[in-house]
Image (cartoon, rainbow, N blue to C red; front, side, top):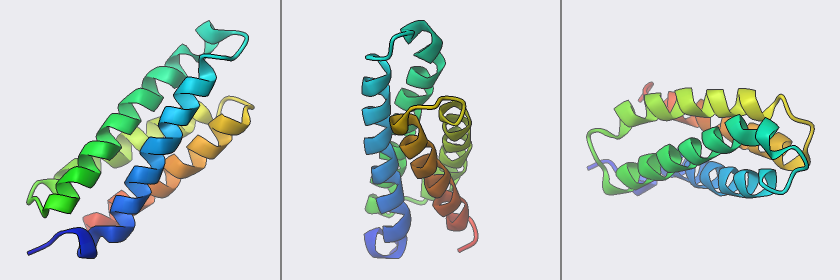
Length: 111
């Protein structure tokens, strides 16, 4: 049975990404031009949600985990691109975590 030990690197990348997306969304609400950060906040929340779901399914050894990881990688890419547009430390940190997570999620489909 597949599960946590086989998917540990991807699970950890997803959980790190979700944590940094939550941090980024929260920090974005404190920026001066919050309206400009609306897209970033939305993608941060979406990314955190899909990363958490992917980590949960992988931990359970779900046969649906690899398919969900494809969607997770796509959302992580979108979030990384959006965060990459902003010159805030929390956005840079989030963009890197998203890129790393997308890479790990894509590796899931090569197993």
